Image: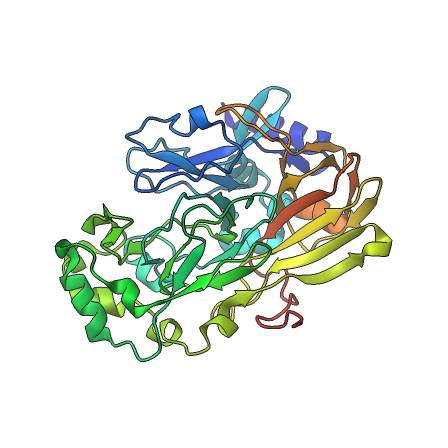
Length: 410
């Protein structure tokens, strides 16, 4: 598609939706994981890209971040806008209409939408791993990756094999103990989970995970607003009896450090990993921001808090009761996915599917531009059950969002 044609098509889509554009589902496989089959993707399509690519256990939302998968096409992980039977990358629309799409401040600072979100759905736990810091990732020309979790009740009708997540290390864990785990990599289970603590996962709650903090996500479906990067390092040599290749430990490590155990140990943020108040420092519960029972809707913060003093991403859950409307004004652009119900966002119809074939278009995902989000848009529930929308935001959009630990206690 030529630049001019892209510009015309993107302009037409933005004008038709009055700043709200419809996005096609973005499916991502992982060769080293086992899909949990709760993303509404048809069972016969879980391996639609071939068993050599792995099962599809992720769906990405409003993404301009490519998936770092071996053998992946260049657009894997990237979201497409669909308008009148034609499609184009959300990334290209943002490149073309930057300030209108994501706001002048974000565009001038990053020249891109620097975040994304996804559903992660695995049958069992995944290896104890970390995501590199910005400083570490920059050594390979990549970006660091803080992330967050929220466990949507609508998708977690079953907990699958292990709805618990190991996080960090027990206080008092030493670097030498972790080094010995890496030395035992090829001897079977290297025992790194013996140094950690597992937390039971509860639908309707979440966690904020800074970079360089180890975590072994459990088997709940997870909504994950995060920085726009796909870097990681696996520190667990076996999971559920399956080997984890050393290459997944050093995937985003400079080649000269691939066998430097001290470097790999020092990659970890030791203060955060052995924090004796780890849960208090990272656990999230929803906090009501607007609305209530008498209003027919409620808007809750589900991801909030700062990472090393920076507000990098945030997310909210909007529930509108049948027959009701809510006028939403946000501080900036947002990607939205419906997890229950039907209705409309502005002029755009929304319907939550129960069954999706690979390659099929849906009506459950949109992107709202910065301009439209600040002007406001109406959300109406036209169905017979609650309409529930998850939406996430980029950096510095909600600097006054709640602080970690500020949720109400029973």
